[in-house]
Length: 320
Length: 296
Image (cartoon, rainbow over all chains, first blue to last red; front, side):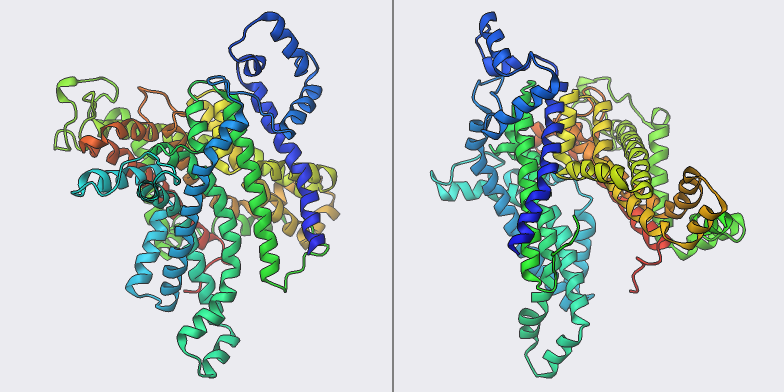
């Protein structure tokens, strides 16, 4: 197992290097003088020249890349054009909000798809099953930003009593109740796509497991149906779902950009989106780099979890 | 030999032209429904200049914020522009982004996949690492990053969405090539002395078109959704050009006044377009790929 993890980490190195080259190229494609990123408000020509030298911008591009990478590795992704704040610091401030929203969405997605997916597999062709299939069909095609607006319209304006605020954020440490009130709508919006995908997967892998001999044996032993489903069937049916949840982490990261924008939820996604119109590229690409790294490591984590859950899978000597 | 390979490759096993197409469609009614809706959408986009009741850009302030009526089927926005006309014109942007970005992803992705699968070796290794790097980004984040770097314009959104689509085609094509490559008719073609290029284009490619047609349909759905998301974030078409995603972002400020129709039109249009391409893609997969057909 340790060998497998080490192998995977080693295989990730060339991919991470390519990713950083890609982001470096994107940064250089952008209009504007990158030195101004570091210099901020100070436009003293001598200082600019010194900075240009310090950051190696008078060097050929491959050398520049190595210098940029060595800064990036040490957590220096440049400064925001707008606020002159180091990009890493700005992201660190916004990260808790994004993690809270992402975790809430993932939790909703897992609970709903497990419960509804199981119900629709157990009661095949029932009303629950039909409804779940409908939600799956519609959910994968429904634009999340449109759903978010509908939810705001309903819960903040149309339904009497203004049940939930239309957006905004109160830190968890300030007021738990107000924080959760503002969390509900964005978390639902962000989880919808995952629910649609996961629910179908739970249903179909449960149906597959139901046809296996050991389930018949469990039933023949006289176990209660509930015990057969929870203790025997679900345990095996969930293995493919774990992989899927790993993929959902990607869709939750990208969904955060949109959901945070709709609900003015001050996370990393909103930070990047607000930086775009003002041409604050260091912020945009910093967020992109961190998103890619987070996505890669979550994929790795899921693969490891998968190997641990299913002892039949041996990754010894398996190719990339 | 190539004729035999060709016969399995065309979209359906043809007996005689139009008659067999009719039989094929009757056996797969979902294709007819999905294809019909997609066709209507394409026609609406093509004919928008002739069938849209109003100018989508000209403002008309005394008609502003009208709820849906017979005069304005989907109501009007704050500047008195007819939402229905804007939705019709917006379909031109969405569908052209769908078609062009899929063309970009398809041509680059499929040719890379064909080469990687057929040549193997160093090219395969390098190409697949680049594909891994592209897949290391969440798709929409990569599209946002590329569009932001190139500048917020609809052409750049097309390029970005096209690049994001490349890995799907490459992986699919490469996998198919690897499985077709070892079959006997390829060995036979090689024995007869066919050049590698001829083998790839005449013998391998026709055998994977079914899978690619399905992938292209599904990725058009994704491209339309991604364009709407980029436009929603201000990275796609710029005002006053009618665009579904951007119109929804614009309408958000009128939500508190309960002027729901401003976003309802474009929102439902996005859903309808994405849904019908997804529906058609699923139907095509079931009809063209017997291995995936579910025994329901």
